[in-house]
Structures are given as C-alpha cells and as structure tokens.
Length: 496
Image 1: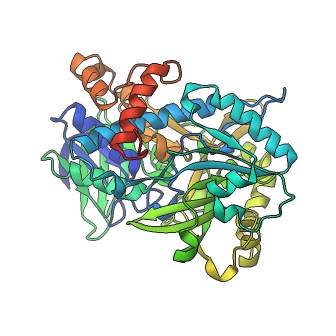
Image 2 (image 1 turned 135 degrees about the horizontal axis):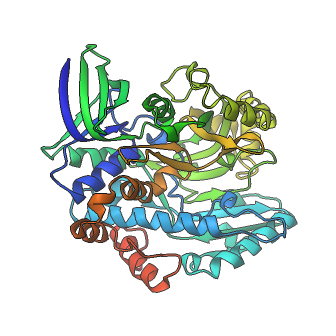
C-alpha cells in the first residue's frame, strides 16, 4: 500500500475544508496539506449553489434568529453573533480579493437586499419590536422598517403586486445584503490552493479507515473509487468537513468526544423560476415566518439567485424526510449511524420529535399545486406553469445527549474536536457556509494552540481578518472601519 505523510488532511471539498485550507496556507506556507473528496468534482454537495439558499446569513432577514422569550421580549443575541461572524467571512474574502487569490467579487457574491416580510397585526407588531431592538445596535443600524404599502412596493414590487389592500403587511430591509454562490467561491479557493506546491487534491477518493497511533498522529486509509487503489496517509491533523458524511467519519475516529452524537437528516426542495420578465421584477431575498411546527431551516423565502452570472428566482425551502446523509449518499446512512454510544440520544430525540417527522413527511408528499399555493402568500400572481421543482442538498441536524430528554435535536453548527487537537469535525447546518471563516478560525484556535502562541501567526491572522481578537459586537468604531472596507472591496454598496 502506498504511504504518504502530510501535516494536514482535509476530508471533503466543501466551503469549510476549502476555507480551513486557505487560512492555514496563509498562516504557514510550509504546511503540507492534502484534501480528499469522494466525488469526481469539488463543492458538489451542500456547497453546490443550487443545494443551498445562497443567502449570506447575517441575521438581517432570518426571523428564527430572533425568537420571542417567555416574557414577550425579542431576543437578539443570536442575530448579533451571526452578524459579527458573517463580517469575519467578508473580511477574509476581501483580503483574498485584494491579493487576487479570489476573482472579481461578481463571480461569487452579488449585492441583494435582505428583507423580512410579514402579514397580519400580530406579526407586524412582532416585526416592529424586532426592528427596534436590532436597529438600536450598531451592527444593525442601517436596517429600515416600513408598513407603508407605497414604500413596500418600491422594496419588493413582485410581492406587493395585486396584493389585498386590506391586508396588514410590514417589512424590514438592509440594502447591502448579498447573494453568494458558495460553489463558485469554493472552487476559486481550491483553484488558488492548487497553485501551491505543497497542496494536493485527490478526487474520487474516500476514507475507509481512520485510527490514531500512539504518537498522536492519524493513520488514514484511502481508496480511489475509480481504480480501487488504496493509499495510507500519516497525518498530523485531520479535519472532517464532509457535510453529511462527517458524522460517520467522526464515529470511525473513536475519539471520546464523538460519543453521544447522532444525526437527523432533512431533505429540501425549491421552486425555481427562470422567466426573465418575472425574474427582473425581484431583486432581494425576502424571508417570512416559519409555519407552526416547522423546523427553523424551513423558513419560507423568495430569493434572487445569481449562479454562473444568470439570475433566477427561488422559493422555499420545502423540507422533507430522508434517511440519506448526503445527496449522493445511501438510504442506509441514518440506520448505519446508530451505535450503542448514541442509541439513547437517538431514541430520546426521536420520541420528542414525532410531530416534526410527521411534518417533514407531509412536506415531501405535497403536490405542485400545494407548493405554489404557499408561494402565493409571497407572490400572489404566481402561476404554476412558471415554476419548476429542484432538489436541494441534504442537511444532517445534530442530535446530542440530554439529561432530561435522553437526547435533543439541535439546529445549528458545532465543532467537535479531540482533546489533543489532532482531529476536528464540523457537524450541523445553518448558518453554515456564511460563517465558515469564523468557524474555521475556531478550529485553528482549538487545534493549533502551540502555533497560535507564535507572534507571526497572531499578526498574520490580524492581516487576514483585521477584527481578529476584538469584538465587533462591542466595538462600534471597529465595525464601521471594517464594514466600510468590505462593502467597498466586495462591491456590495455603491456609495462607500
């Protein structure tokens, strides 16, 4: 068996692995980095543009990031944290654009206003309260609110077209939101990495074995899926960034920190419209409130998408139940993920989420007519013939041990790392790609502690991300400086 030694092995070629590789390559150009991908092309699963909403999740429009607590107050802490994390991504992308390591911004990010839209007196009242809470903070100081139909027609003409004049409606808007082609971004990151002598990309390659040796390094067995050749890798650090495939690999590693983790897969679908005369009437991402009993990832939204330079409209997502962990995975994935170490958590989460499962199955069984009826709450004049259904990516939500319920289902992203920092995995979904840079900096802080004590790494991180080590939530002047640069560099706001 062929054997190779590397400093860093990245499993998966999505935005997370590409971001971590890019950060590490900037921090230490001498690192020997290998990336392996089981498919014949990179960024083909959740990172693929049509497999996600392309929303630069900044907390501007996602109402599920600002829940109402028992006292009736809108909680904004999660929105603040996500917004600050997204600003970190914008800083790193700006750095790479400035040094020509990424192409012109329009190749992967486009200015697209982010709106929240609700109807009915109760939801309009909630949206106003949310606006007042958020707009008072410097991160959201540019947010606008209106319940004036004339203004809303300017903001979102397609949605207001022939809407019932007696219906109470309200919206908030941030003009410098974005639509991101994460597939294009990731392919560009990897193309730049491939220009470096100490980076190697292996496609059609899957991990078949993963075991830590006594010296702390990892022996990883790889198999080329096209010619069945086997290779053994001796890696100092392993990152499992394989999306829905990360849980299985984490379990294979056997690290104690993996015990109790399970996964609950959810599928998604979009309605898509490509008719130019309709598409040109809508240039924003408009998020509403999730239906009662719907999971957070099912918040309905009507989005402008720009993929490969071509605009389209997308509405959804329509969630569904699946047992696959990957779009190009196996229907056995869910069952094979159950082990004696996570069985209690899986059973506990299952018992307490029966209604969710029923909801997902019901979503999957909807007719086209039913899906378009939901769309008409946003676009009253939508015609069934103008929209077609596209399958989105799979999302594996996290299941963890819970003292009260035995197991609990969580919606978000989480890093699981070994105590010695030699292995890390990223589990979960939204906000995912939008906060990839902050997430991968977290991996570096947990797994490269010795190197981070080096002044050169600290200074380099501050070059890559000028706000590193400081709080954008607490420092208004720092945010103003950082945001002015990123909006200009990424061409997200004309007058900056």
